[in-house]
Image (cartoon, rainbow, N blue to C red; front, side, top):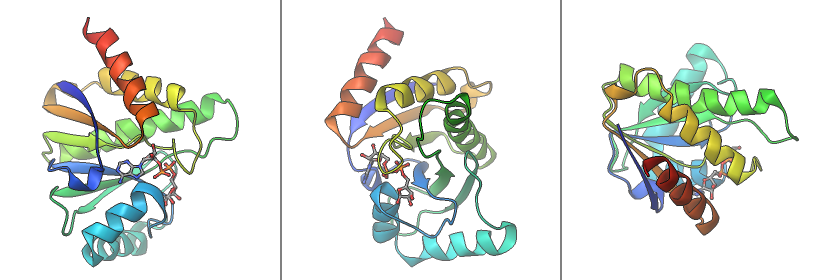
Length: 173
Ligand code: AR6
C-alpha cells in the first residue's frame, strides 16, 4: 500500500473513493462535507437519506458508502469523526475507528485508491498533530492493508500538509 500526501480540494480527486468528514445526521453540513454535497449534487444526499431511512443516524466512528454523484471519484465514504472535548482515550479510539471502518468499507466495495481528508480537524477541533498521528498509525497498522493500492491524505491547509509530509517522510526513511 502506497501512502501519499497532497494539498488539494478533495472534491477534485479522481480516486475510487473519497472520504467525507460527515456528521451523524448524514444530511450535510459545512467544511469538507458542504463542499462534497455542493459539488457532488443531489444524488449524494438522496443516497444518504436512503441510508438514514434504513439504519437511522450514523454513529461516531462508523462509516457508510454512497455514490459520488457528479464528482470525479466513484464513491463517497461518509464517516463521523469525534468532536474534540479535551484529551480522552475515547476520542482517540473513535478517530481511529473512522479510518479503520472507512478502509473496511472500501475493501468491501473493491476500492483500490482512497482519499482521506483530515477528519475532525476543522469544525470538530481535534488537534491536528494528534489527529495526523492517529490517521497514519491506524492506516499503517490496518490488518488488510495489502488489499488497498493507494491511500491519499488530502490536506486543505498548510499546517496539516506540513505535518503529514514530515510524519510520512520519517516513516519512509
Ligand atoms: N477538501 C479537503 N479538505 C477540506 C476541504 C476540502 N474541500 N474543506 C475543508 N477541508 P471539517 P470536521 C479540511 O470542518 O472537523 C461539517 O459541518 C479542513 O481544513 O470539514 O470533521 C460536518 O457536517 C479540515 O482539516 O470536518 C460536521 O458537522 C478537515 O477538512 C463537521 O463539519 C476537516 O474539517 C465535521 O467536522
